[in-house]
Length: 458
Ligand SMILES: *Cc1c(COP(=O)(O)O)cnc(C)c1O
Image (tube, rainbow, N blue to C red; front, side, top):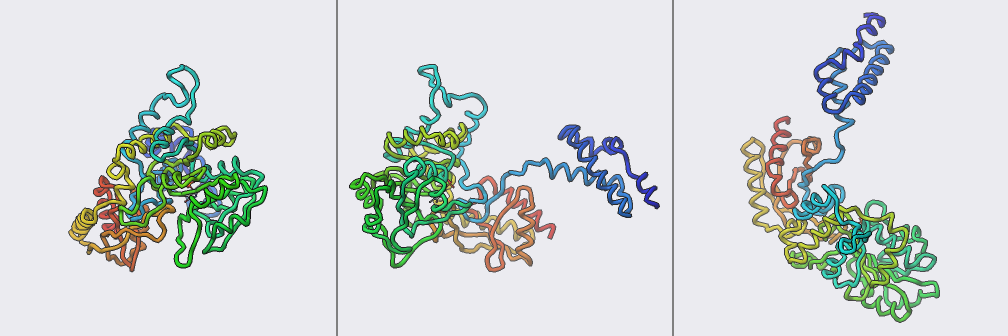
């Protein structure tokens, strides 16, 4: 076929639009974007023909157009089954929300609400009153403020309390957590000067004291979220810092990071400093995330004295960091679970962290049986889950996993990641492991179907 003939063999835009699969695509998305893709596909085909290649068939063109549309317009954010055993998996969205939180989002999100409307007075109110009572009651703090995330909370605090001044922090706490949050850079962004004291492993009260100048505004403590220091280590407690700060009219800012309301020791983990402990110890501002060990929506929670919290609230930056109604709704519902003493039963991350080892074993056993019956040798093994999300570094929870001995665990992993829904597991000693701890109970069947499909394909 000459290239002249090849050009003539290409269908028109109208002809392609009449193909049943394209008609269906138009039904799904509407005409203009589909016409755009059809034109683009024909342009590409003409370029190929001009380069001496044969004209694609109508079937090939239709196939490309349909795939192109679905790739372009399919939502790019969707659920994934987390079989990694990492409870607060930052890349997989951290804390799953409780039923109550989801119901609250639905209720408040589907219509109007009193987000910024004072129903008593019939006039403008403040979104910042929501969740504040609950936060104060649960933590013992006099006042609270909720912003977009904890990074925003720290940035806001340092900007308001220390801009133009100095902030003293131990060399052992100049942390970087994931996603580009580094304490020295946050300080720079806040317009304050970092004054590092002590050594990596040992810092004493006297180190802070020796660093004080007339420009000092804040003594800061940052929780070492994602690594641990062990051995010959020393640092003053928040209470020590608070005592020193009072003597010199300074503020203590405690960035707790994960910020738990429950004692993690009850789950066989190390004791993570709790929010009430930090408030009690006298930190002027305590900040933590809503979606780490609190198990709620993404948010940054700030606690402190009423005058300080008011100062933060009135900073123009707060307007840029404000939270949406759905966040406040989910946060309130999550906090209510704590208030009712039901967090361990109702908040998914605590259900996962507190999961009974026999229940985990039974689930792993069930999966292994189903898979073995489908011809894939699977067995139950002991392994470790982690909490993740920048909390409890180095700490693990004993678990039972379903282990698959397949020829290529990497290929299985890639196939499962490409599935619908995608499944993410982990590979250890050449086995593909599925940890039931982080798989929601109602996802068992979906998981097994995804595995059967992947294994049937080889
Ligand atoms: C996680 C963390 C942050 C950041 O919190 P986000 O809610 O992710 O913004 C800040 N400081 C510490 C110590 C953390 O662990």
